Image (cartoon, rainbow, N blue to C red; front, side, top):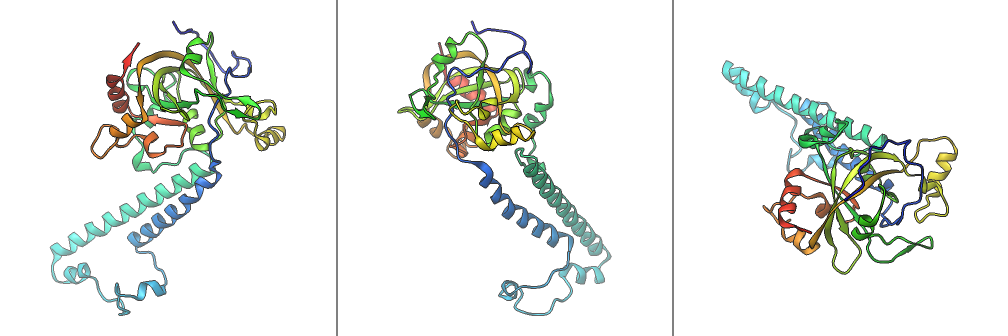
Length: 312
């Protein structure tokens, strides 16, 4: 049976993970760049909806407006002839202004999220799962689900073998730190995990990648101090320099415990087959962002995959 114990950030001294095993992921500093284009388009839509004045550009003088001077709109023409039409026009205008305000708020939320290095999501996309992250203890309806990747075959980083499998986790006699995450999106997911959340263990970078078992989050995020140690696999000189300057730790770690191992893995081919249009996993984050080593799993996706799996 997995070790069960109550932990806090101070209760567990820093120790090197029995694997320090994570896939090296691309730096996400560049990932924030696409948001600039997204924000520009949303601001432009908001300006259009609220009637903000702007100068016409050469691209706007083509077939759309034919270079003709602006005249009264259809809504304005109707409102001068029909009081009922005028009311409809007012409702349409109010709806457009409302949409514009929502777009502006979404834009502000994304900009603030990027500045604070957290996962940027439009306000309209916040779900019950996201709200559940504020609950101190994950249990029942508040529980969240995740997928974490590790490499079961030998690969060396900084002269250290980062191999770690579901069997290695099962052999651990104390909560295992899931360290080595050097990707902002994956780190943000780690920081949203709560004690009691469940996660799939995924074997990656192997001949037959796939989900091989499950684990439990037993301690919420704390600083990943392995990033500051040159003797570790994923030493980050910039993070070490920031720490030396008294800045907040850049990377995070959670602690996990073994929960179960599947009799047969759910392979990547299986997941892709279940992720086609209209299939149960068609919105699964891991399939949409295949290089992300820590991803969200919805409650529906979790239940479906657990029904598919055969646990030993």
